[in-house]
Length: 445
Ligand code: MV4
Image (cartoon, rainbow, N blue to C red; front, side):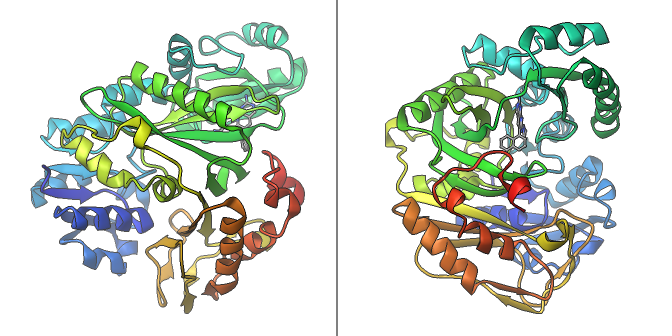
């Protein structure tokens, strides 16, 4: 078993990982940037090491400094959390070359899934439906035009190295396609240092439904059912829930079995997520796979009772997954609201600063994953996620009622947060009936 783990992340996920380690009797080493020097969660780690200035490029993204800290502290594994270095196969290689376990899948599966066209090929081989589109990255412009005519407009241009929606373009005809190809390539190159792009048919008002996977190094793969993440704004998820209110049980089962086939085809070992889009005719299509623990993992933990972070650690230490698929059941409904330090009344502009008043919600079936507290100063340098409010109840109606009550209780002042937006969403009839799609937030707010 691993005895000391370095947590290569910050904020709520760093705290989430430290908590799992402490319960498992594993020592923890936290790393922090100068901007996070006073973060309270650092005290919960056995040791905290400064790895550089506030800029992520000089600290949390700096693989060499993190490896150096890990060597100084003599850890036997590194947990990357989400974001930062979590899906960087070079970092995973570097950890293992330095004789430390990277808590995540093999660099090879990360490479395979990080290339979105490679992932489409893999899905096809595993008989997992994909959105009609490119078999290979686009070369010449006329090839894109021919393919768009074959699959039919509108089409979506996506970045081969992309994911999470960045660098996507919609084209409704030949003229907009030609001009978008150029800007999409430039944006992909600038954002991912990879100009590769590909085409997919644009699906009309799909839902985003993803499947949680757990796979061990012995080849056992199980799924932990679905999460619905349709409520997004500019590709940032806002509300996630499980089970998805938008699909029936047989679609859910088929989707989850498809996700397991893909994970097996990728030789995947660790926690991972397979994302699908589901159209109104219940057709589902694979879009991408994420080789990391995700922000929204707690909703799955609440309904299945399975601690995903602990299992990531056990799997990395070589333990066999002793959970049988038939024992993974969805008990009730869980919903998560991401609390961001942003002003929804002002174009979601960042709202950093000191939190003077922090009064968390509480009660039966309520979980709050956060690293903030009264007096905490939200830095403008990082992602605006400051916490997650998760409720777990026996039915969707009860979960919604519980979330509404929690949103009434929760006070975070004077910085602006997304809490007031959720107070509105949770009274909106479309949301309450589970009838939302991709464009709901942008249309309604
Ligand atoms: C799409 C799509 C429509 N057609 N792909 C958004 C996040 C990224 N993972 C993929 N995304 C989308 N890909 C095709 N071929 C629409 C979206 C999309 C979306 C999907 C589900 C829920 C909310 C969404 C918000 C914006 C875009």
